[in-house]
Length: 79
Image 1: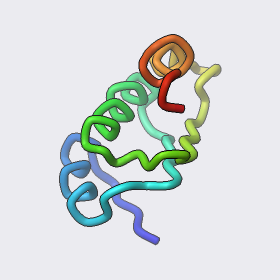
Image 2 (image 1 turned 30 degrees about the horizontal axis):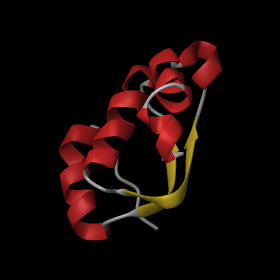
Image 3 (image 1 turned 45 degrees about the vertical axis):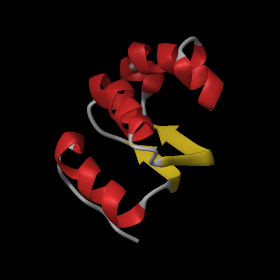
Image 4 (image 1 turned 120 degrees about the vertical axis):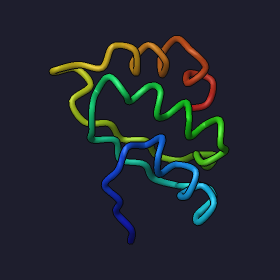
């Protein structure tokens, strides 16, 4: 198990290099960054097929862009 506390844009390249794909992703950080961070992981091929992506507090206080990406955008095709 590995946990890192850093901004996603700073740590994603290293995580991608070290671990490749992830089967489980827990998102519990700034809600406004959920969509862009998940898209950045997608672009790097870090989200394994069939992966579970769990995000905290998407309804309250809310992460509308993340939900739109999952239900209406490219995320709807992937997940």
